[in-house]
Length: 391
Ligand code: SF4
Image (cartoon, rainbow, N blue to C red):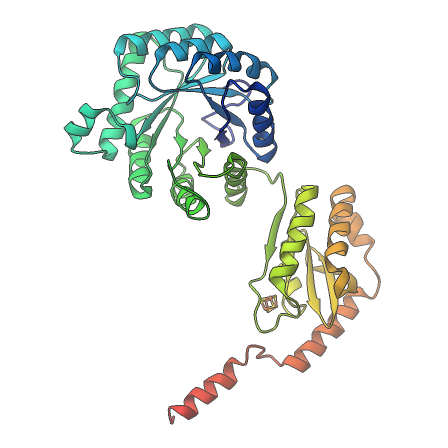
């Protein structure tokens, strides 16, 4: 797909779709750039009318990522999109049904070396298949793709990706499992019409992550009722979380907080996230509520800060490098994050303040003395319960 490989050993790619009118060239390009910056490798634009196709002719040469034209009812729009120079087409077999038209599009795509996604959707399944299978079953979705492939085969075209999306997560998972057994083509994963976040994000993740963990899927798209930048960001973050793509942006981890917390972890984590995201540094940063457990629990993080006795304890890979006043925690964290990215872990460990580790140890001990080992007072509560119940 343009300069992005999809399938085989290629990295799983992230897709999203513009929400602008494709005829609005500048508006659409601005959104494509925002999507690419958020992690989209491939962007799809609707091609539903002549003005959209003309827009694509101006958008494609200026886009930072490959562009796919989304075509539903009118095969002429697919031909016009090919004329515009798109890198890929998406055809919905449920909406574009005439064999002669499908074959004509496939044959033109073949001549131009443009791949096509057979984009089956449970909500717009061909009515004949719906009847034959008694509904939008996994078998019906896969059969729809098989029929389209048969038309393509008649013109000797097989440069395809396949998707069998549904808004029901269990249906989508079953359909893709069947598709992966049936086809040897790249699969484009997605839960369609997942709705607004956070529920939409959860549905998308439930479906996409389950399949990716089974080794199924080559390219993914979250379908959210939200700014599409959120789709691209979610796609990228999911792949990074699963270790399927290298970290490109910030990964902020924070402890859930507990009775030992010496700060408002939620507020500090939010402030740190805001400040660090602006700088888009490719590191994992931890915000931990206490120095008793924080540096140890987050020792895998590149950088972190843990609170204790009105101080912030900055640590790199679990080693304390600096102790700062509590109200400077966020600014110190951001400064260290920038230096860490610029200079590397070894250099920043070598530049650690002498005495920082000892200061942290003293604070840790002081907190343990003060809070005891049972900071959440669980044992005291258990005693009270036993007394009350007469044990
Ligand atoms: S023990 Fe410390 S680091 Fe762990 S959850 Fe509680 S406050 Fe956070």
